[in-house]
Length: 114
Length: 113
Image 1: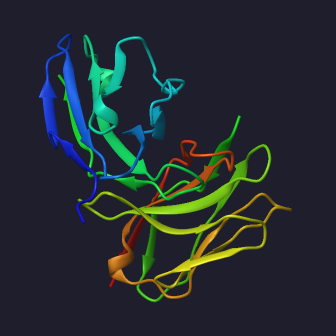
Image 2: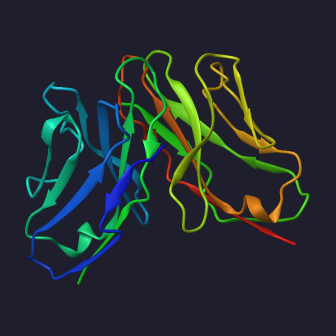
Image 3: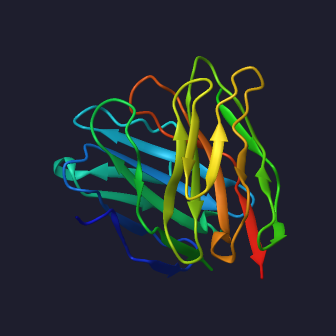
């Protein structure tokens, strides 16, 4: 079946602009995660959604970052007033609802802030 | 908090050489441990995992053993191939439900013919 998909695959924006990154999880996966992969920082957790529960936002680096998940499926990560240090690859992953289930990753969105 | 430390790269090996990538962790309780691989131009994929002490995860000739006494999960392969060139990430996950992964910084492996 289809894996996790993300769009766009690449995004170049100017400093100060807002961007939206989209994630389509695997059908039936109720857990959804956003991570960021940047040079020198490795892979960092950003935010986690599980079903209808309040999301775990503990990894968001600033209040310029937010995410929502509509209808328990598609998720959008929004970065407002982008800064050059936001340049990174943003990865989305999804997994089944309960237990210690494997997370399946999307191909990522490469964000470049000029 | 939980953390993962893995050996810095890049690592360059000749084909058929032995590979070890060290990984140690700090965690409360008994986490599950993972190795993920990212091939050039591709997404992150699970390579192997171990969910309890002394478990050995294995896949594609790679192995790693969950060592609670040394809090380690070193990745090994007896004979690497050019196709193993990739970035390898060690990760852990708390066993309390569907929690996020905590990753190491990644190790880039280049295998030359």
